[in-house]
Length: 126
Length: 107
Image (cartoon, rainbow over all chains, first blue to last red; front, side, top):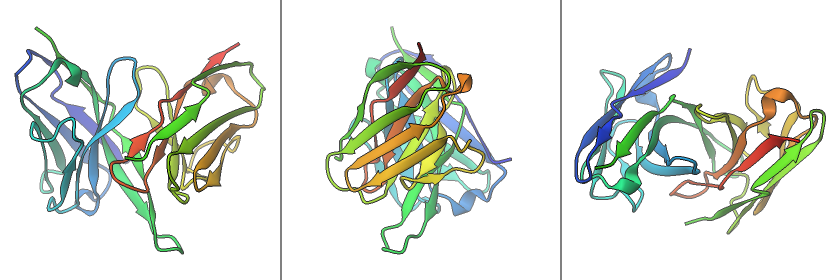
């Protein structure tokens, strides 16, 4: 079974740090690009970070750039999100998600998030 | 960034009803549109990818259509387990962006 399991969520004070982990199983982890997506309480889904299969290409949403660091350890089949200078507005459930890609006739290609982990809650509050 | 606008933001329907949710992109995204279902306290689940392809294991009452800027998710006969929030997401350009969701509630 293809599965992603996040951990590391906690209550932290503003300005604090936290490291999230995402353990993958059931698929060849080092073949896939991975992402982090978050969801503030009662709100919608926001993409926050991406890492290529090798770890050589990384991208961030403007809202977390300079504060969050994505990484992966393919030997451990794990994805990480190091979060520093946390703000109240970073309070959310954080999901890791695998990207599945498919080539198309027009050359654009398509891709989608599947599966998602169950999520881990990060609460930033004093 | 590409903005995704879903409508309606919520709807109330009965079991057996046909339900249609629309998603509009702020620029053409070809067929790079995915639909997810999310139930309270759970992770999103992929329903439709590439605008109209049904994910394996998803009931055939779900269907997707559209290309360019306008897309539709249709549930042909609403079942009790379909009451949830539905999100569209574009995968044409980074950053990947989501619609704000459509909550389907029981009438």
